[in-house]
Length: 515
Image (cartoon, rainbow, N blue to C red):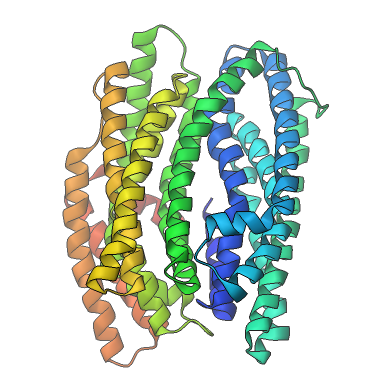
């Protein structure tokens, strides 16, 4: 997971260097997001919630042949649906752009359409890669499934560098559009590589990759029954993201590109600490056997440690995005065409995203607990509430209030991300209450959260001061950023270590072992 995230940051730095927040960057970001609807709806999240609980339970019961049959049938159905939707996306690219980026006009709109047509087939391959990931995770084979995205990132980086060196010297909009086209083709090649590298290991685990459409198999039927409400639940969350894109398109292509850059940073702790923990815990929670009381106790025990790990690592991440976010953005993106003004824009948007970071990562784990219980309806209801709040509040802050009060498009984008953060806290509280009705008290580490917030605030103040002092002393941007980040991390670990937080001691031991 860490390797793929580092590769992702290198990919984004390459994009920033050659495209910055140009209209071509906005077109590419929108084009990536449109077919990603297919990946997000049919890919990792939905498969994890509907397929893995059934597959893991069959394996826990020793029914390995049945589990393999379910996996092959789900994979075959998924391949058919993903292929059909990818073809439809290629044919309907223009109306999709008009629907999901209605603020784009003229050049930006015309540049987005061919990018969408190129990217759709690659995203269909990523959907199948997510199926492989589900099988591998259920067998506790986490390495390959999380390292394989490195191939995808490597292909995009190579395409960006090759195209950038050949075309960036021209400096005109057409050259930037050509660079975006090269990167899109790199995404398709990378998608194929990511899927292909996982397939042999999956074939060995299942014993065969023979296609199957055994929809009447009890395991397949159970997966499909769970699939629809999970699809609606995950789809509602994705709908929120697409509403943000629609609204952001009216703020300008550069703002849409800035939102995507901020999202890369926001998703880093979500992926490392939220999704990674949830992916590892879902098979464990799903494999619980016995009566309701035993399963409830098992879930509470699994949640207790997992929630503490998430809170200890995510709370300081959120505070860092606000306090030293400018330094973080500058270190990762301020290169080539990406200037100081672009850094400030992304920082503002990132600060809005930080509001709901802790709630979103904890909520994902609580949602996995419901999926392990075979009840996807509560996450669906909570997600619908979240979407409604995000859409209404985001629209008000990004458009009518901005028009009336006259604040900049960057602060309008801050309104979009901040409204999503506020809605994430409401979703989390709903999930916590509903889960408590099923398993008893949910072990949310409130005391740890408050302590981590206090330690992070002190670390943020000192980290910001360290960065400013380094800049005042004439240090280059990257060195000042490193000073701010190092000061933040050292103060946070020292404060939590002195307070006797077990996670701080464990984290410090892991760092020492790696030296």
